[in-house]
Length: 91
Image 1 (cartoon, rainbow, N blue to C red):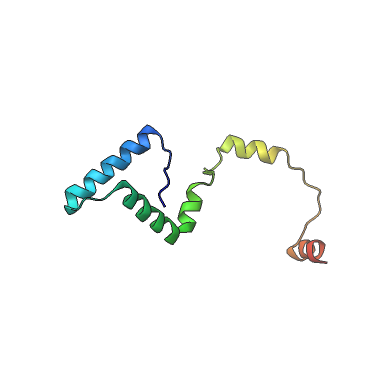
Image 2: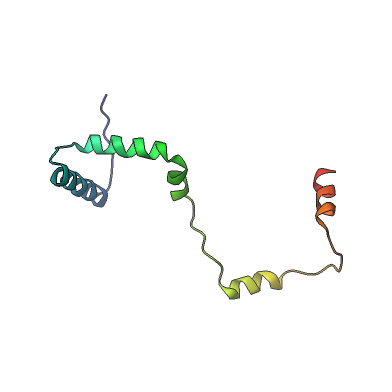
């Protein structure tokens, strides 16, 4: 069963360039369908990398943003240990 896949012009162009490069370097003609199948196969093998590529990128905060965050913190004057936290969370 063959199903069509919609893609923008830039992606289509990049797929065509990849197809041409494969033919140039291997001497083998491959279809775009074969390329996409191989790409999906590789993506399944490294699923975590693919999933991570869709996560929002996090960059370190600027110093001013860090200061703004810490400015809102207030010290209660009470020292809290890990055991105190464990007691509250786990009883």
